[in-house]
Length: 334
Image (cartoon, rainbow, N blue to C red; front, side):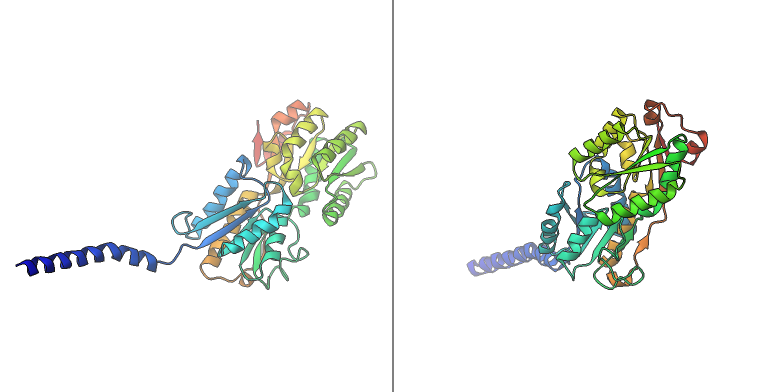
């Protein structure tokens, strides 16, 4: 009798132990969720909320939902570009499956320098071949591919829109970043070509710090330029509120590369739809998680552009926005 009770207790303990251990065993056998490393030059503020939503949309279109079947490790340089190499190295130590670098040219370069094996999907404004990210657009040839969102190629269009808004302008100021000398030279040449006529003069100034931006805009104001063209540059993008304040202070009509400037109080922008670029980068990342190789995915050049204008900023500058310009705008901020 006593022996039977002992056997029953052993049997119950065995069954109970099996019931507890079994889910653990099953869980251990499940494959770990893939991890995307997300590297960016800026900080995760309000300006990036829409773009992060577009990034997650692109993942969802590829079958991945953050927190359900994919994990995203975010690394933000918060405007300190010299932190990017260490942040990229940190993602590599984390053994992420793919590194996504949308909208950060220096971030893409840092990621490419940090690994030759982990796939990288970039979204860059500059030419990815000249940056050393890929061998060529059709056949990237290494561990990186992505989207080229063509910031410099739309300069002629931007100049044309600015001249339509300020038709009497004859003196134009151009601001570029000397830390990117090749782009600075290209932008200056493109603006000069777009202005064309000898009736238009152009003054180029350089700025690589917030203080230098203040000095440059004060100089332009002192020289009584009629309109300002701000070159496409990621550092300038982090100072968009400063640009809006200073341009308003000096009553200076200005054209920018991205809608972020207009949302911060600037006058007008024309350029790639950056949110769509984020969605495309995520789509490529999803394909790689499913087994595609970066060298199999050609670099895609953006074809979606947007023209944004602020009627409020125009009114503050005593500018009347022509109806035909308003009709062509993708968005008018009142």
